[in-house]
Image 1 (cartoon, rainbow, N blue to C red):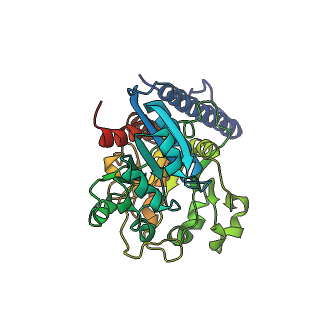
Image 2 (image 1 turned 180 degrees about the vertical axis):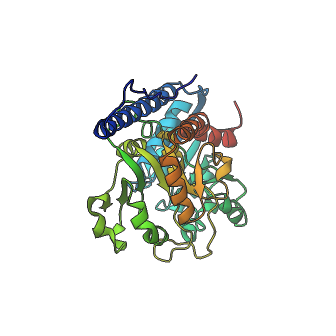
Image 3 (image 1 turned 120 degrees about the horizontal axis):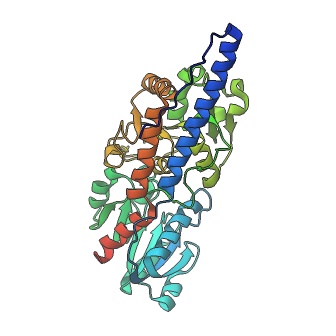
Length: 379
């Protein structure tokens, strides 16, 4: 079906002033048409029911991170998915006595998220009683100085970083599996009505030094567009005061607010943190990062064009040029920004394909079903 917006041709000559007025009006009509078409397509995709996954007759004890925000949205995603996939879920956190709780509940599996603050002697007792244990690590490879001390205490280790698999196996872990995070549809979904946010470009994330150093040389060029940056530590950028409220320093955004912002932006930049950061990381072995961050799936689920720096394993999840766009340096990023801000149909097509791929392959129920299949076998 042809979805081109056809501009009407006036039947008589116009003055210069009339031409300018008409051109402005037609530009507004075109913008409204493009916005309406995109929101309609997003609504259709978002309204499709997910493929049902059979419920397993098992009992899972889920041990939340206990760290609060920003980990609590991950807990919400994992918990709700487990509740849809299993017969029974017991929720607890690292501050509770898991041994006493498990003695009364007798779960088939104890699944720990993060686990940095969980006393390891409790895991040893659980394993000794015949209960299977698993940990899903949240921040690989950035805190491997800590995770290397705890992984061998679990039956199953799940990591969101491909390059940590052999590292943990080399430490004696027999069951190490690659399981990136995903998009939680209760949090991240496209805005299907007219968006309350209208931006050309958004970046939401903390000002790690690699991000500051990447953005700083191109800030004048980047901020020529309707660009807004949100996140903590952006006072590290010396020029931040020049841009006023367009750099929102120290603002934590809820997942729902983040999704609305993503969906209301024509382009969302995803610039991964570096595996080399002496200030923020605890990765003295300098294990490199090849896998996409959780934000990759969340942006795609919000129905917008994602422009991400290259990650070696990105193509396993989204096809570059079709479902995501990538860049290798600041100038390539700026070139693609200029292209997609002037090529609405190409931008829209990638955003729609990214959403469709996410709903098909990259939701938390699918990830948790994969985890349970590894531990308990296929249904």
